[in-house]
Length: 258
Length: 373
Image (cartoon, rainbow over all chains, first blue to last red; front, side, top):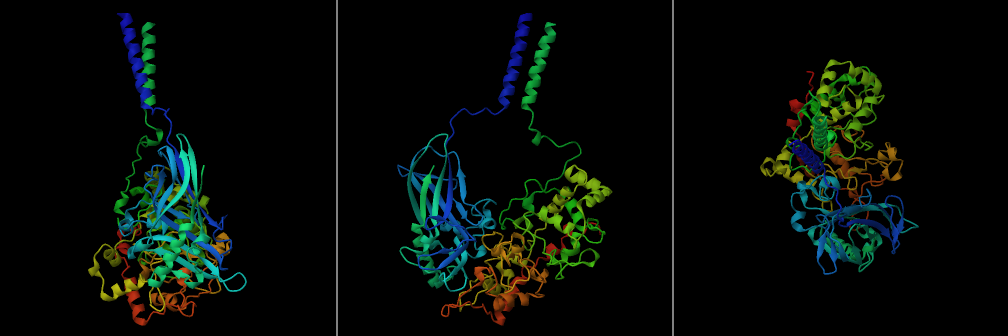
């Protein structure tokens, strides 16, 4: 009987300790799903572009200093080799080169082989014209965070480009320019090809280059001085902005995933 | 002996279980007697304003806000006990100063116009030159400024520690003795409750279009219309958009040069950063309560709204260093910058709209008044 009591007490104690140890979160021994950071790098003719300091000369001779460059993207996704897509977060990304808001980290991604990254420049019409005040304070669509919403007057600015320019390097004075891309018509879809694998327990970075100079080259050469303050306010401005946005197809390049 | 060992074993087992299962100390209940009443901030910030993150380490409590309110109105915060925060931030003027420059201790004058205080949760930078990044950091500056309150923090700490009401209310708000940095957090809490949301403009934004007269609607349209020469538009919304009538994003007009001077008398942000690209750049204020917050601009140079409108319509200095590009519009033919040139009717309509932003509920709210009166 004494032995039984001792045995029972011992068993009870063991159970208590076992219960106590269960109160702690078990340490995971499983493999973790891959993490991918997506970073955007401002470039001018393949070199890193610095805002608010360095002058850059376009191929047409115009000299540019860029103060602000912000872009809204949506549906940012990894594209698998079978063409299925994996949305990164909720797909929205706000790039702001001046404030160095250029890198987003995504965890718990499916491992596998991918053939590139796709995204939409701008956002869908329904979201674009819905109440912007529903978005959390740190979300890319929060207007107070990004300054990329036109208040009550109509949707998001898909891209802000503000700076100063001279007509050429020798003569002329610095004048401001301001391009704000506003309107559903400017949405564009892009696919940036690059084969890469995301394996378990890996943490990689996808580097996307955005070449400012490409905005003014192909298929249509554009001079800043022709319309230095374009906020898509009339037919002429919208036409010019469409040309700029069409040129942007050559602007994005997925340089590496490592 | 056997029993003792058995019970010792049992005691260790139970103790281990209790220790293992105890709450994280961070989430454990507060010491006895400290039980502040947390404020549901959804009652303060309207859903049609952008969402903001309030300071995670300074949750609003009834006690903290009341302590902050007392401190805001208490002249003991100045060296000669003559000046409080409220001396230069008058509720009747949406917590702005009706004088171009404020008067500090011993009659000294500030170098810039005192900014209004409301809807600060949406701001990313503070002061006209945007040199501070949080409300609590901002608060400590005028207290120590020689031309404002002239106080030193050690003296103030000692002074507050001797005042019975502060011993009581710091305990209630923070479970602590009077402390300078908790003082700043308490005033931050009070200022975060100063939300202006009851103007006619606010009603209009919520869909009550009938509150606006014809001229107010026309003024609203001018405010939101791009200037596309020769078609006139005020284009005010670029820097004063959203329900808060203010752009805070620093990449999109939250800090800007609005073309006041061709030759700068005040370097603005450039005086802080030393960068040529920041010269003449100042924080963009909200236009809510604009009829109450004059005189206008960082130096209070404009006494009336008419003068402000005339500046943007007719007098912007296009050659001002770092002028915000949204203020430069080219004539489509001559390719030279042109002024908006509103006519008298358009100016009057724009002013009529600006007057709808006056929030009389805010400036009469008893919760914001001097608690010592």
